[in-house]
Image (tube, rainbow, N blue to C red; front, side, top):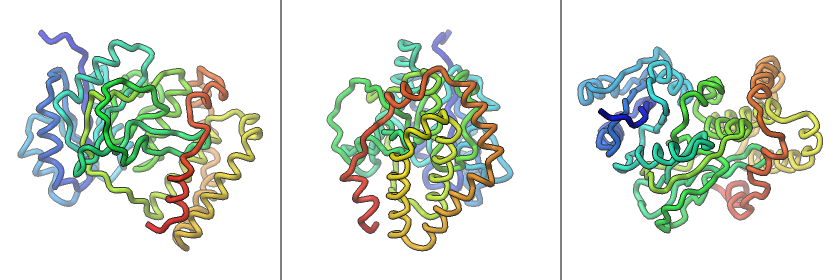
Length: 328
């Protein structure tokens, strides 16, 4: 009898037909045996759900009547999950055989860890890093750690500010305690919010390089995604930080806001409108932010200063310069 902890793998699909074979086949080839795979379909129109049902009938299928986004899809799968651990995974990935076992073994040995994230390599350049967790600045900006750097092959776990939404393993009870994945993020910023809350709750987060994912990564931000990133970032700061912290950090926040405004001006009118809409959403969603503030303060186990010590105080200025000032 397998007495290892059960894992619920949640694959969220939206028109991901080209990726299904590679992704699901690699998951089913894990050297870890006590897991279930929940395939959540967000009202796909490309026939991917029908194909997955026929090709992989052993999966648990959850069908949504509309596109609930990545976070909403995770929560749909969470309703059917029976595992001690939850492992969301992007459909445009393939995983190494030790993907699950490496993360579960680390979590079992480290009870203070609330979540872990694997080493994620670029699918087409498997010696290049997509991310080893997230770097999260105190203003809520998240960056892929070590993006495009060459993989040095290190297997040493690293404590990191945040998980990557592409793939992570989190304790079911912890995710349930924080109210599930943040559906307001839809398809952007959910990993930063989850990471921020994990830190606020006093949990540690690690990247476990023995666990490997290959991601068909494309660096792309359109106006809709930019709006979601900014709306959710601003709401997170207002919902989670103490009023005195917001006042003290105002100069830093204003500098970052200026840089983001400059970025939107360089990108054009659609981005300017997206940034204005993100600001406007703070007033429109003020009651929701107030509700979230009450929820987040109830989760709090550490001070804002202790939270900031877990995050990044410095920005990667070279990379930020390229993002803001150089054309795509």
